[in-house]
Image (tube, rainbow, N blue to C red):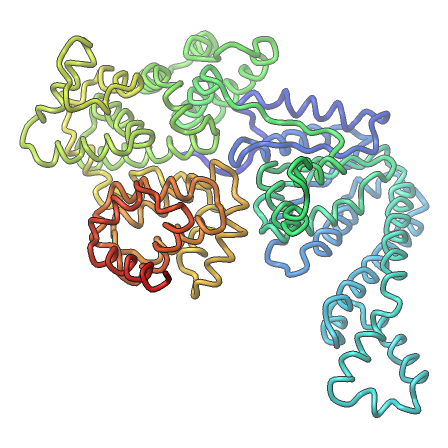
Length: 626
């Protein structure tokens, strides 16, 4: 099994990215600078930051702070939490104090002043959002700022104070009093904060400060905006560099969602507001390139070495890989490299067999798992678990283990064919005739394969034709290891990110349609293109298990109404695969809305006609509205 956590142990050749970023942020001519490290979920952003952090700590002239933006996701005031979190992280960093000598009191004073500025901003934020904010202000340290304003207002209005504090007038009076100096004070507070932060950096006597911010894209859209606003307060201070790791698509969509009214009013030829907003404070965008087949083969090879070999032996391989990749960026580090390195050491036969077999499917693994390192690792973890289940059931031969891997790759990329094969196997005592025909065609394309056109894709044929053949193993046993998870686990949904699962759970289990509508219009729409497809897969799994699932259809409905990409096409696809007769009559209004929105699309009408009761109700409603 392999850990899903970020690591500074590089198995992807990502050290080259970290070294490039280091050369940028440690070049004093570039400072101050803000770098955007962009990549999809699971692409390795966090690992690059960890490698970069470890490397920067070796530089005596650099203080590096690693900050996880998602750790403050539960705070209502994410903006102030992040600001204070960065300041406190600097205060706790021993190296930040290393060069002050006998001026330690000056640095302590600088921290005190900076915290006062934070308290001012907290207080102003509190007063901006509430009429009588005294309890909240006390909790945030702003009470000392509010009381003087109230005392002055009471004194100025002492002759008619009773009248002002009666009924509805009281709320307006207190709001006006508290907000009277707000505009002036908030700008002053920001100026003071930036001035105090700059003074703090200067008094530390350090060469440069590098702040690494991770997991910004895991936050809710509203918190992403707040975190970006907080980060902006630190920017452009001399001797500082910020590296912000995020999925650009998610952040851009969060910005677009926040300013949707402005976007709606803007002309069509205006540039993408989300990207424009980010460009204002990201001086250097750096995109992590997708893995290629050679890199996938190398990665899988190293993962199996890590799993099978002793830790000290594997460390030796990892060090050799680091040297190799520096000189051979475009080559595979494979089985031959490992054999040459470990000449005098015994290598388990299992390792050579596994690497030799799996390496043949590097391209299929890459395409099936979106060239995503985290998905690849999770897929291999699932393979290891199922392999162990086979062993526990008495099946220990290598042939069955490798056939299981092939079966899982079919499951991951060709779910319909996977289910089809499952049905053939379970409904036959011996080798299904359908499988025999497909294997014959895979070996000789002149053979007849009429009726099985969906099995003609090149990667399917490679999986079918590569030894061990499915017809030579007990496929029932291979399907058995996942008998309880034929839809959820076996469909690859276990590889979906935690963020997507959380958003799906919130939408599917929403207490009201209003809540569900907001989630679809904001959180679902803010997902990346890849994550949205995973979201639909989760929805489809619900409908495949129960075509009458009203919650799942309601989620599809609001995704369509809120213009979530591909929602309508995905609904048509899943409707074509389930029994439309089971669709609940309670959904009549929702399906009527969908038909109206899509001009009574013939494809949808043809599917719904199978549900006579539902269609009669839709037609009756149309007649009533005429």
